[in-house]
Length: 346
Ligand SMILES: C[S@@+](CC[C@H](N)C(=O)[O-])C[C@H]1O[C@@H](n2cnc3c(N)ncnc32)[C@H](O)[C@@H]1O
Ligand code: SF4
Image 1: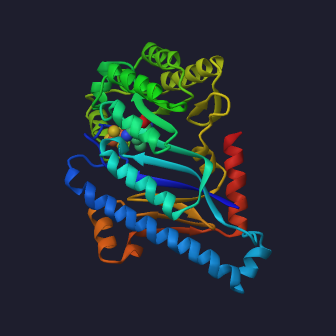
Image 2 (image 1 turned 135 degrees about the vertical axis):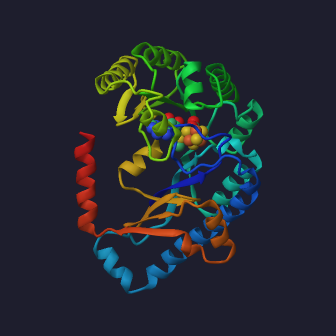
């Protein structure tokens, strides 16, 4: 049985954070309905193609070569073992869209009974009721973007929420039954001291999330943050301090029983994210929605980033125009990439 992951991109945010260059838009609420319709269409088209190809391939001569190359097993069927709904801010849209999305994925794919189903949520965009609805949809993992427990820093980053709103989101998530929660923390931020980092980390650890992601700020082209730094309005901590922050975070988390299983990711026993591990281990995954990446049968491709064009291409029955081809890996390329990933990991 071939196991695959699914990634779905929801590109809407209440407000754009100053440092962020992910494909996410604010003030586009009027496009949400159209976007989801296009997204549902893309999921239907791709899943139909995959299952059709499996049947055709089992009959065809060409697939005999694939068996020989060890790429396809005779009884191969596709089963989804992770679904990751990311963004953007998936929690900003009404849960009716998330409900339809989950139903459609269930209708179109075989979902493993032990599948990890994650949704990213931002404090300030979820109520307890919304979280309960996610649980009812069998979403079993949430990822909460906190970034810092210092309200001044949150304001500086352009975040829409306070630390207290994060606390309330976290507590609501536990109350409705989430047993697998990730919290995102950022380091290397302007005006962030080592004390800030330690305080934020201690506050997060005191809540005992199963998983913590720690990201060093990357200054991205075209972001307000880069402009503020270039104009000397804000200053980054120097490189040594940023590295010290990283080692300190790693040390504190390991002492508290979190395993550092991937560059930015720490998890308690048995809580490494299956979604992260799949990407790392070169498992196949299908991405849906603007900018989503896919890797399937050695072919790597992504969707375009333009929201309007993505919707138009689906409406005009030309979904192929949404696809940007990256690479068709041969067995040697796969081996090389596998080795490189292992070296990086060590
Ligand atoms: C794609 S964002 C989506 C999560 C959610 N919208 C949020 O902001 O909480 C995932 C995470 O990437 C991290 N991130 C985004 N932009 C970054 C940047 N320029 N440098 C480092 N980390 C970044 C943040 O920690 C964020 O929580
Ligand atoms: S909420 Fe998340 S995705 Fe949206 S702009 Fe901020 S960091 Fe980016």
